[in-house]
Length: 345
Ligand code: CP3
Image 1 (cartoon, rainbow, N blue to C red):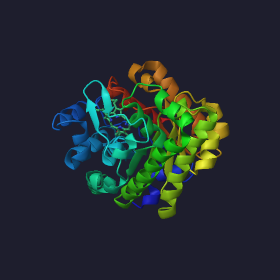
Image 2: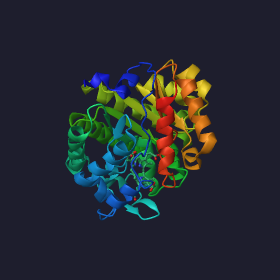
Image 3: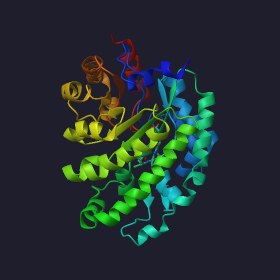
Image 4: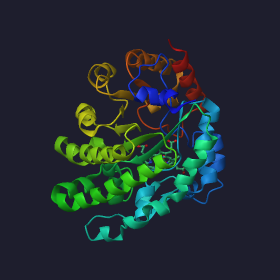
């Protein structure tokens, strides 16, 4: 099958499909028993990301089980700070822990020179996925957006409101810009290399853009995203890029217009009719089932899936969640979503 016949790519090029393509953020992960088995073979989480045998296996697990339309390569957004030389680890039950960088002096540990070398296992994973994935599946590559990655680099852990990063960005925008510039450059090179090795669509996760005020959102979410999208499209004009400015609310329309993304992933707070009337005329929309409803299941899950599909499938649309699958999700609820989305007409 030719690339341009793949459903996800068609939707991202603006086509309205009678059955929307479906994939789910964090479709590989701890909610799947087979993931938990494979995970035991890796020393730690970053090892899992950097061992192509294991990363390919966990990427394919949700495809085998649910036959999603697209496969997102298995890795993490924090491989970029790791590749830049910051100390990054993932602690059991605690999430990511990084040696925080909170001053221009502390940025001295960052070295862009070896980023692509360091990430070569990720590129091998992508090449192997392209040969092992069924022909009709789209391979999605990804990275974190500079603002979201910067939050983890500055705060040193998750679960904060990004206060230290926001404070730095207000107090000393010039030095904070230097950090963002390093991330824009490394991320652009990383994504171009992903495409060179076989990624067909890119998603940029700006999971923490929602903590930014209006002007800061323009400066730290929209502007770096625009530079990355421009950088990718200068080399690969036809590769669709999906933006995910989580929590961006009413800024979504400006985000779409100013960044040049080919699709926008919507979180569960975005009102469906507003998305249909305001965003869908501008670009392909993706989303936005609440990930906790996927845990809860039942009639409310069925109702919400139908409501999303009915409201958004009159235009270019990709079914997804509003945020990634959480570990407590019963695998059978995921099967239910795929069944309802495919059989709804
Ligand atoms: O299936 C997929 O979607 C591909 C894999 C993927 C992971 N992380 C695997 C992962 C993707 C696309 C990500 C993106 C990611 N990573 C984001 C952006 C999306 C979002 O959820 O907002 C962020 C903020 C991160 C950073 C990160 N990685 C955190 C905060 C954590 C800890 C929280 C948690 O769920 O444990 C991780 C770890 C992580 N990344 C796991 C997985 C499967 C769990 C780790 C494990 O198995 O021990």
